[in-house]
Length: 188
Image (cartoon, rainbow, N blue to C red; front, side):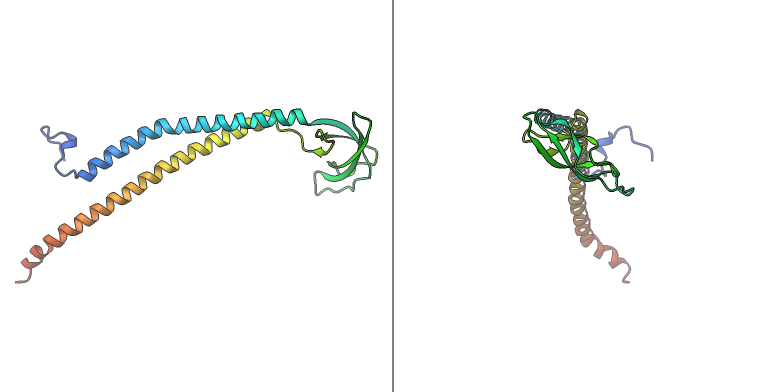
């Protein structure tokens, strides 16, 4: 249908006030999404990265590697990559320590293994790395972006639902007024 040059697109006589509100709301929501999504992703990702890097530095300061000897033979098992075994080492003070560490199955008693220990001499996991911190930052930033996107979609869907309910209610009210006039024509 050709557009009348005298009627601007927004001045369409068939356009309801709810249509105009919907158009402006959608424009506002898209602008907020264009600004808010990258901002939320960047700030959440950066905060998570910095927090994880603090943990990386703290763990690196608290943990160190020592060479320990297996205190027992480790059963050969092809179904697992590592198996818990008792290990023994001498700490910096000359005290002999024991603990449990994950080692390769089939290792013989007396074999040297590298284990991570904390300040108290307890066997622990290796410290987190900068790669762990970067991954945490990226995943958190992505989750924040996804959350903002889903939140915006939820607001949009809820607004559309409310607008459509109002439109249907007005349409039903108009039909209640018009229907008797139309059905009266056919009762003759």
